Image (cartoon, rainbow over all chains, first blue to last red; front, top):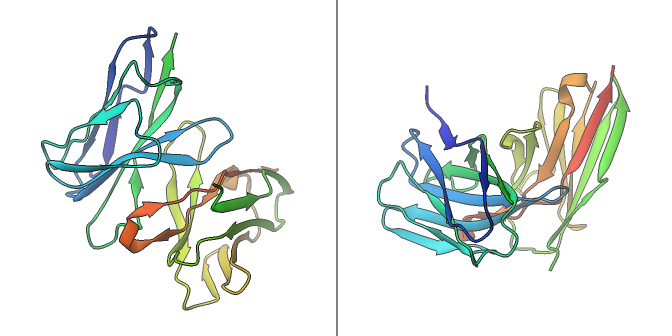
Length: 113
Length: 112
């Protein structure tokens, strides 16, 4: 049963703490993406990776960091430098033959108290 | 900057009616025009997409109409059903950038 898993579904953290969101895919996709979704807004791209050990900043990378040590995994760290971290975070993946068709995970809702 | 403008923000339709959602874009380099469907608490899923070499594409009850000169494309949902109630996003892209540019979303409610 192929797909993208994100854990946990809900995450609470205190202000000033770093937190890492997990994203795993077993679709054998080369590219992976992290988006942020705020209420009433579209998705905004944080980081993306087309290949292992390489990644690029998206539109809103400040305050976030990523790693891509394995093809299946693309964890996102929300650092204390991110001014408004409370949001719904979505991970996606796509093949290198069709970057346009992205498959999304179920998301992680992060609340910073 | 706002490259993609989606309207309306919300839409209420009776069961069996037609739902129409519009997306206007500025970047003429976009070459792929998809619509994504998102249910509450879930990630978006690709619903239907069109390339600029055709003006219309139909898949079941869902149709995309594309107007290149007006830089607009729209989603038509025929015979709308309560199960279609979701948020819909247009997300045009240009393949070389490998990025989708999402609209702000349209919350569709289909009344039984």
